[in-house]
Image (cartoon, rainbow, N blue to C red):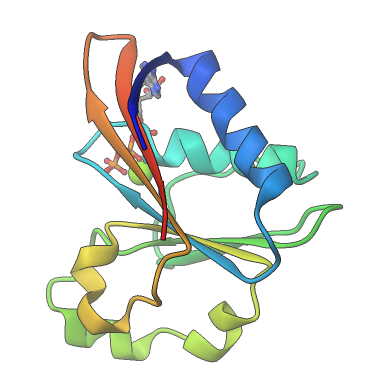
Length: 137
Ligand SMILES: Nc1ncnc2c1ncn2[C@@H]1O[C@H](COP(=O)(O)OP(=O)(O)OP(=O)(O)O)[C@@H](O)[C@H]1O
Ligand SMILES: [Mg+2]
C-alpha cells in the first residue's frame, strides 16, 4: 500500500477508520521510532471503539485493556522488553481474547508476537506530519 503523509488529526482519522473496519480478533502491529505516533494512534483507535478512558503508554504493565462499547482493545507496548524471552511472562491467553490487539515495538517480543493482520508503519516527516504506511497481511 502507498505511503501517505498525515497530520495528527489525519492520523487519528485513519485510526478511527481502521477501528470501525477491522474484524474481531485482529492483531495490529505498530512500527516506527520513538515519538512517531504509535500511542497517539492507539488512543484514537480506542476512542473510536467507544472507550472513554484515554489510552496512555503502558507504564508498569506492558499491556492495558481499553474497554469500549464496540469491544475491548488491548494495547501491548513491548518497548521495555530487554529480551524476547521476557515476553514469556505476559498473559498471552488473555491477550488472545482481545477484540483487537495493538502492539507497539512488536519486534522486541520476537516469536512471541502474534502474527499481524495489519501493520501500521509510522515515520517522522516534519514536526507535525508523519509518513504512514498501512499494510494488510
Ligand atoms: N502527524 C502526527 N501524528 C502523530 N503524532 C504527531 C503528529 N504530529 C505530531 N505528533 C506528536 O508526536 C508525538 C507522538 O507521541 P507518541 O507517544 O504517540 O509516539 P510513540 O510512537 O508511541 O513513541 P514511543 O515509541 O516512545 O512510545 C505526540 O506528542 C504527538 O502530539
Ligand atoms: Mg508509545
